[in-house]
Image (cartoon, rainbow, N blue to C red; front, side, top):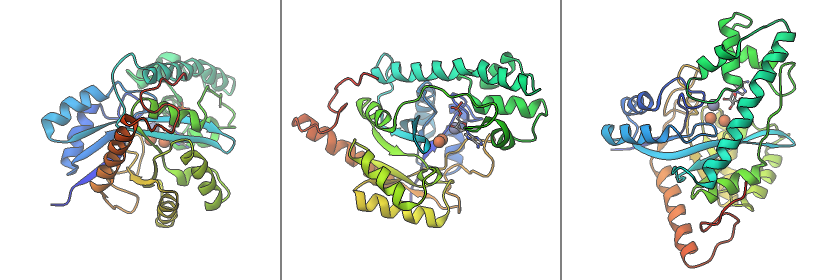
Length: 306
Ligand code: AMP
Ligand code: ZN
Ligand code: FE
Ligand code: FE
């Protein structure tokens, strides 16, 4: 029987609508053999996901999605098969990023207040639940107060980079994000590359190539964010650069409309071989690290000081 995976999902620990437990149950109902939980800047949902995955027969890949900043805007780097233990340099770096994100929420609310849209911080905190507050939760509070009709409208008119309520926050560079993930024992892939604000495929390939030189492992080709043409272009780039094509829906439950768990935009599924190939690459790396052949900063158990 063919087996399928989804290597890009979010839970209530970041901005998904489902707790890890419910997400894993939904994955099983969708016929998935494995999912990667890739919450933004946080690993706290992994334990619950793994426990439920063991009960439900769904493999859980320990993942994360880290935001980085470059000239062309934000880029998201996915980490796969990272070490979720507490007290690691990766955990410390993520905690710092979350604190920076949280600290900026009151400043966003100040801007909204000045724009005539008052919101209490407690409202945003209630929406974020256990996770750290960020723009998606502010956007939802704006919808609840009927300042806007949808989360998308909140971003498009006010919260997007350069928007009137936008406040910047500390972010890593893409290279730092890759090093952080690899230092945490994992593989790094560019999330939804088709969303990057580049002039064309040539620019995307040049950027991907430079990041491959810093240790990038994969390019997310199969995703709800890509049309068929973009998917093909990304597969071509991955092949030319010796990177693995990865795939995931970027599921956020009902917080992101039009995305189905385990499905790409056209309704396609993601074969299990995508995950096997990732694991093979990681195993090969561990073997070469054991022989003392580390090439990249952060490899072979070295601490990354981010
Ligand atoms: P923050 O980490 O607080 O800066 O918020 C960034 C998150 O907001 C992203 O990871 C997305 O999940 C979400 N987001 C960014 N842009 C949009 C958009 N245009 N519409 C809906 N959600 C968005
Ligand atoms: Zn998200
Ligand atoms: Fe993303
Ligand atoms: Fe995502």
